Amino acid sequence: MPARRPDGEPRAAAPWSLRWRLLGATALAAAVAVGLAGWVLAGLFRDHVTRQFAAALVVQLDQVTARLAVDAQGRPTLDPGTLSDPRWSRPYSGLYWQVDEPGADGVRAGVLRSRSLWDAQLEAPSDTLGDGEVHIHTLAGPGGAGGATLLLVERTVRVGAGEAPVWRVIVAGDRREIDAAVARFDGVLGASLAVLLTLLLAAAVAQVLVGLAPLRALQRALAALHAGRAQRLQGRFPAEVQPLVDDFNAVLARNAEIVERSRTQAGNLAHALKTPLAVMAQAAGAARAEPASSARPVPGAAPVALAALVEEQVAVARRHVDWHLARARAAAAQGLPGARAGIADVVGGLVRVMTRIHAERGLRIESDGLESAPDFAGEAQDLQEMLGNLLDNACKWARGDVRVSAEAVAGAAPPRLRLTVEDDGPGIAEPQRAHALQRGARLDEAVQGSGLGLAIVQEIAALYGGTLDLGEAASGGLRAVLTLPAAPAERDAAR
Image (cartoon, rainbow, N blue to C red; front, side, top):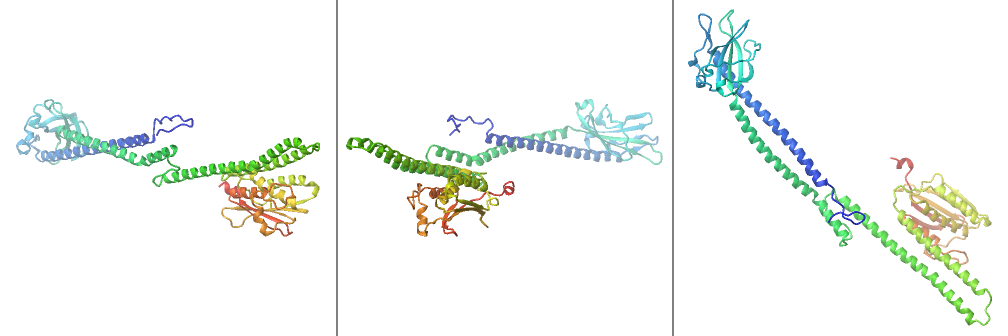
């Protein structure tokens, strides 16, 4: 199934896919490796054959040197019949010997030479040879040999005692045999390396196909997910791919959870709004019918009652909307990386607001440990929502004192933050504390409210993995303990 862009159109395949990149890199590396191996092996074989041929010529040179003699006039002599190789006597046979006479005015070449040279002679390079030292050269062969290239070995010898003259003995052999052997080896080597390269490329193709097979399985799993045939990525994948599949399935599960939670919240909100809307609709209908059924209506009574009822129900509806919005915002911010909120700033702002709202009661709102407390690992608006509800509830019931404190939970892993809000009011009896945390529960109808404050705090804290516990304060009032995840210290986060 082709990949698609966000607008739904098929996404064009990349000109260099992962498959072609792997194959191209493998083919290039294999070709370079095989080429270098062929070049090295061919060179080694050529050097080996050349050294062997040169060694055989040195053996022939030793044979010629051993049979070299001088006559009574001091001239060099050599009986060809004493040489065992018949190629010495066959013209242009490919094996030649020659004796030169070095002198002060130059070298006199071909003083003696093999019959195989016929009427030609070898033009060896001019160089200085120590006694018994062997030099090796390459030179063109005699004309009758068809332009062959010769490998030549030479040495200087003294035949006789005292101030005997120095003679240069040369033996040369036709390189066509070793060149043919090298050519045959290069041909076999080239064919062998070509087969090897083909097998390597076939192995690379098989390796890429087998190695990328899990990605094709992953593509099929994604296609099934996109087509609605599966709710998650299914299948068995290698250890390198499985973590990606697990993380993707975790994201899918979280998205499904968010969607389900959103549906539930939308249903709860719709259900919560039905009651105030029905009450207002009923009141409006009764107010419309009242003038017709009452002979002497009281002027202004119905509108005033209807207005009060509408205000009350609108407040209830607004409170429900605020509650569900707070839940939705907290759910969206849950696990958001890098989110943090300072306790001192949030509590300081809330204390100023509560002091103005309850100014006529002259409440004392004290705080403790805010500066040294760790930051909250979440959104500042959610922290304001939770602490705002707790402080508002404490101020409503307090007789004169409200206290807010914050501290890190010792030894908690991951780090946790404890926030405590206490008042000196009547408190809540232990049997009623669980009921007070239920949505819409109000323990005293005389105090204005919707009964959603503590429920909102508990819901938002639960979304962050925190808790809300109610207890008795030292002054006898209510003690609300809020435990939330704490953000790491700035120095730890920077590591």
